[in-house]
Length: 488
Image 1 (spheres, rainbow, N blue to C red):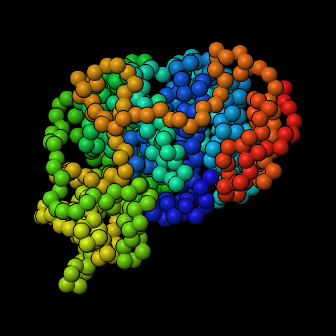
Image 2 (cartoon, helix red, strand yellow):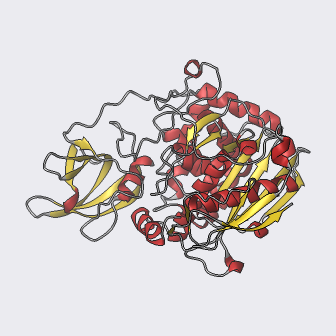
Image 3 (cartoon, rainbow, N blue to C red):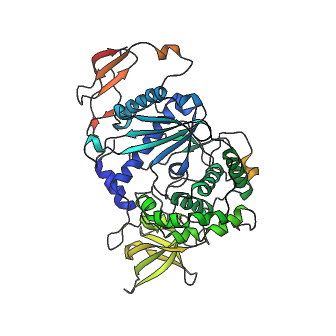
């Protein structure tokens, strides 16, 4: 497991609490464990707000739950889930040093309104920041098997911007981008929660916008399955009061800075006009903002640039990703200090090593280059901008362009295309296969590491240990376990 100081440093960069960053870290490894489980990887399809954050947009709200549609309804079974999650807990402890107490698993299985089976699961984990077993932080799993899958799932890389990211990366099967979009619009019309409004408008503002007919077709099938009408602007008025009351309580802790509700509410008429085909959103092919230098785009949370007042400039990348302007407090070369509203587009490193922020002045449309060493402060405004150039501030190589696992021609549907090649994780898988009777039976041998006292379960009488962490999160030198007992 990474150390406490890394989590604190990333929290400081992103403007979030260390507890939220730690949860995001554990979420990433849980997705890795699901992908490493043969039985779960074949059935579970990732969806929801956390899917957007971990698979499509780095600079997005930090979500807290894991939502899946299961292609095998028989897996919504308490005993099955207990067995798989116990395997996952052992794997996570061995691979990343994350402690998930198996005696705290909770799976509530119930009949949903459609008559199918669903499950709400809770997984607790040991935290650097929360002390006491009674107060362990938790991650909620929402599992359902009777949701309609309109499009083939996409095989997407999982963003995991921490130092222990596997060399081969983490991958997961998830909803294709238009399906995530359509599902979010359905949720907005059905329940009208703040996160649904935030997600829908941000999806609409993204450069890689699918054709409205594709989203509309997904949405119609989702609504027909749930026997509800397609949502429209008229019905949204019913949610305004609740949105105003819950906007900050439900979203503020998930974001470094929360724009006002009006920024999103006032965009709804334009969004629904686009969805219904009343207007066609013009999305020209944008060129790069003029200027020299090499694009500076480190992993989100590792920008390493500060204002003269000590604040992180990560807030500027967040603003760019959410298409909102920044109020910039800046001192020019003549020593004159002033503030201005800018549209941020790019960070570039000049030949002399200086990092420059390329932006457009909101008041006059002029392009400006600002030396980051002269930025005194930066804060997010409520003013939305429509990009005039490519937004190059998105960190890393994450993209909203899915790698489809289906064989259909996605280009003909107006979907964004991916240039990133998907790979299959080489990290050791685990879990029983349905076709292997040998793996489902027989004794399990328990070995204890003599250096850190961690225990490991093996299906063979072989005490060799893989590299692992001790209970404090440090690398352990133990490589040969001591046999303790056999479990039948």
